[in-house]
Image 1 (cartoon, rainbow over the protein chains, first blue to last red):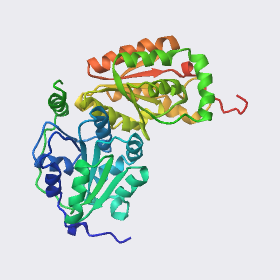
Image 2 (image 1 turned 90 degrees about the vertical axis):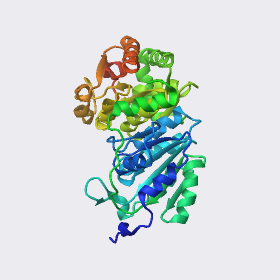
Image 3 (image 1 turned 180 degrees about the horizontal axis):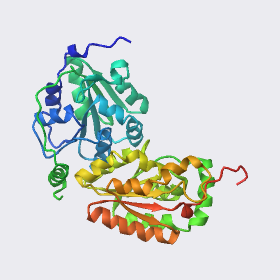
Image 4 (image 1 turned 120 degrees about the vertical axis):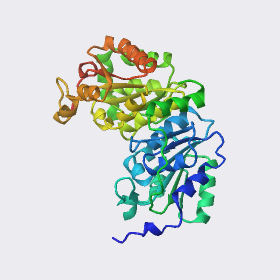
Length: 198
Length: 191
């Protein structure tokens, strides 16, 4: 099967994440393991980020539990295509639960970036936004250029959810910017900033 | 939050309830008193009554999972957001949770798991036995404390103890409810 040339996708991961998090206000952010966690750290490490160094397949569900606990706050999950695929059933779970304040953004480079850029199933045609839509997400979008990105960013930040956005990004490995890697520190600082206790 | 359980499940529940007395009501009271607000579950016949009680409780949000590991991640998110949760499943679901339990362990999240056992004495489906026989060992290997209730009377207090351990620890704690408490699922048409 022919696959697209993801090294020529116009959108770049760091500028996309920087735009997603600009003037983020009191938004709560969960970042999937690998490059999305480094991208979120590169945009400016925040106590209200929960970047993952493992737990592959769990980012969206962490977002669901957080969104249910904090219905007045916007919860944004930023993760990769491989991470989302490993937890693909959670699309049905989240759609059924239907939290209005949750948005999931998948940075889709069609590659497992941390293990040698092997193809993921999106390279062979799996369409994550379509899977989210058919699972029952009321708002879904696919963005692969600047123009589509603009409206996708608005949906991710403001639309009544649950929202699911796929953003096709170039397969590349920008310089590492690492968040803290002690899980207990990440958990405690998040709770301290959000609810004032560990 | 979600719809009624199908009739085929009801049949098994009635058998289970008559044998298991009132432990689901006791467990629901314990969870409510502890302020548990999120219930993540994959259904089991033996858990039907408890799931229904939680669904009917306006202070609880119930979430039906497609796979048990989703619940481990979800309840980590609940704790990040300041809420307590509990994860309900049958024993085979523990096998689906193993890698996700590293999230619980490395971040020291609280995790309260209530497990109805299959594959024990009298099991009529041999496919339940391989996972059922290693549930406790797998949980302990994954740094989760394990309690085991052999009688219906023991379940409520054991869940109360596990709830304190989980949220005052914080720690990962599971209560395994023996198949003898739940009853044996029958594959005979006339039951």
